Length: 125
Image (cartoon, rainbow, N blue to C red; front, top):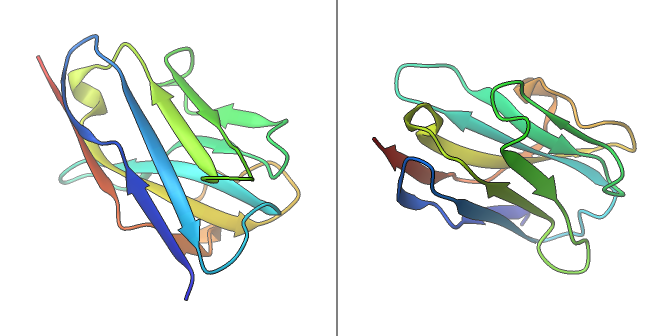
């Protein structure tokens, strides 16, 4: 059974940092593009960051560019999200997702095949 499990969420003050991790089991994700998405209450799930299978191509939502960094280590957990200078508007449940692809990670959630259960990030003002 394929599973993606996120960890690292929590409560942090404005300006603080968190590092999210996504662990995989059931298959190797070294040939998958990986994405991070988030969903705040009452809002649609939105793309945050993506990384291609090799880690050489990264893409970000405008709202997080310069503050968040996505990376991957195919030998261990498949993907990380370093979040710095956090703002209250970053509060959401964060999900990692995987899509078998050698191209850039897509921004559309519907294109991903596997999803984690999510981890809550809360930024207090």
